[in-house]
Image 1 (spheres, rainbow, N blue to C red):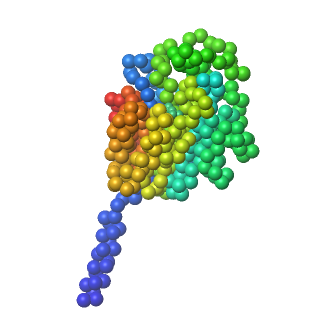
Image 2 (image 1 turned 90 degrees about the horizontal axis):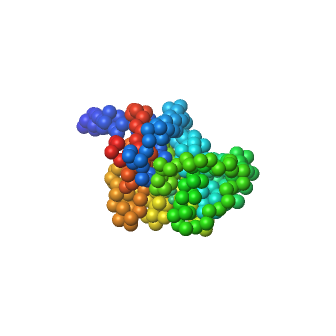
Image 3 (image 1 turned 180 degrees about the vertical axis):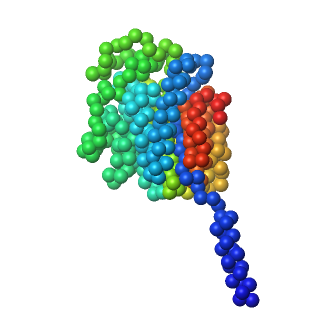
Length: 349
Ligand code: ASP
């Protein structure tokens, strides 16, 4: 009898090791560079190639970190830093302007293992708002800092500080002029330190292209998730407007219990629906898969409110999903066992 019981235990033990769930894919990452009216017909070959190259570079930067076995948080930060420096994206250098002609930057970051999070909103001098968000998380007792206070904190912490004109790009300035003209609002003076006006740069880019927020979700080889988002917000924003990107639960969320999400779109809707947390809640409490959860929130709930935008999602198993209800979203993904996939238009996988 005893022998039988012993045998049973050994068999169960063996069964566990042989049939237990495979370890998570060793790492996985997805990035986005904004969602909006991004259509083949209105994008020339060179612009498309430039976006694909930029997405590929940022994806590879994150993948390199993860391949080396470093934390998801490092992968998120390093890819976003690259995109913040790239004038193609509405984050850091290349950010859109407020109606007053300023670049006010927002970012947030979250760690899935601890639920630690950090954010900065309306900053004008920290070169890398995503690094500021991470520093708020790791070096302050707070989750979110705004405006001058956030910039002074960045300075105190020894982060790179730049003149606000560093963020200026002609393309975004012309976009602002166009938005303000359409609205019948006055056009502010060019910011101090901005280069001399150049000729028409963006006639082929419709104003719906203002989106261009960047975000990254990653799973590292220790099984930890992280998410981050960085943006200049919406062109012509007024009155200290802050969108979803620096708001934990709206534009960014990560929990090892469910998933990691970064969003892009009209922030007001993402805040009202707490999009990022809602997707993770469906995964955590209703057992939705990440694609199903993302589609439920973006295709159904966001669309029902007439909101627009999209999300990228990573799961603790290394699955990647994205969902958007706009004609396009700059997006890319890669995993230890899956090659890079770079997509822009709706008809791409
Ligand atoms: N979600 C950002 C905001 O509302 C904008 C964007 O994603 O393009 O500030």
